[in-house]
Image (cartoon, rainbow, N blue to C red; front, side):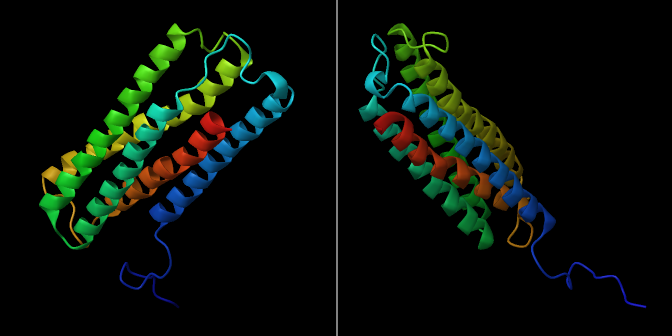
Length: 194
């Protein structure tokens, strides 16, 4: 009769990590589906996309905002590297920096939306507005939820909870934040620039 495996003898990927990969894959499918719908919708309106009377999207400020979000990916990478080295104060500092950059990204995006609504672009103004707010709003929701998760991780890291040997929460937060960060340049390019 074989003995059950202990934690030290288990091989392969931890279930939490596998679960996060599956979750990210499902989120990727969601975004791909929305982009397919966006391009299918646009294909019927090639000569008038965006429709007449609808404002153009702010490419410049959103480009700068994209850089801010990409920087937050770097700061999250730093947090992840520091906990692997058991450097807890640096983990806490870089997690908070990541959260601050994420909040800056959402704040700039919020002001952008207020201006666009003022110029007449809303969910109900046109199919163009609906698709814009659906795709970009879904991403903003992901950023917001992930910032909440990172703040939770930050609070736990402030109390010294994570160590070099015990940091699965940091790994999961790192994985999902990188997904949120790396999908944005794709959305920016396909929604704002094309």
